[in-house]
Image (cartoon, rainbow, N blue to C red):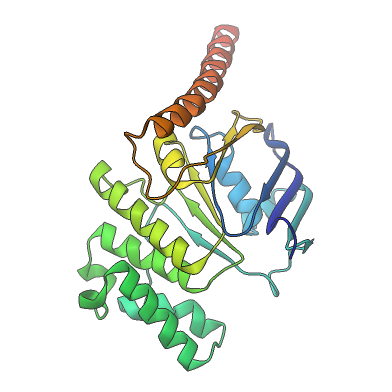
Length: 267
């Protein structure tokens, strides 16, 4: 097995008039949660779109660099990447359990494997009473849990989560974060979690990658060497969070200064 399950090597993406990503190298170890931390507009979603082969990237000239999965050039016919976005995206014509097993059926997995994986995910998420519910019968948070379960059910090479709790209140975010951790521990998936919330990054990840503003570069990588379950009042947790905050705050100051200088220039 390769040391890294996903490698984005020297990735540069230029849109007309702006460089979104500048020579980014991102290497993800298998079976870990990696948090990509950056402000809105910092180029996080552009990186995700490059990874998922988004049509917008192709229409705007593609990108420079190389993506490897398990040491091989990424091939959508061979490798599997699942996605969870901020907006819940359960299929409205399918029940909760049908949504969870959808990807497995598309990939024509054996029926026994489909049922086993579906029941495992439903049990981990506590969805037994809601297995026959349709999305319109669910709350937003319930629907997002189904979407997250569907993504984990596939045991993908990489699971990309792009601020999946953006619409949730703080209490619900903590609850869903714990559910993601349970699913991750049960499946051994490699997760890239995109967020601008540094406490969320510290709570979830084994490694936090901090992005600068556009043109986005990796400012630094911080290992979060904490046992689970993590406690936000733990002195070690607070220490690591402060380290991340210090670097992140410096990045934000630079963003504000650049914006201020640009505004003065325009005036």
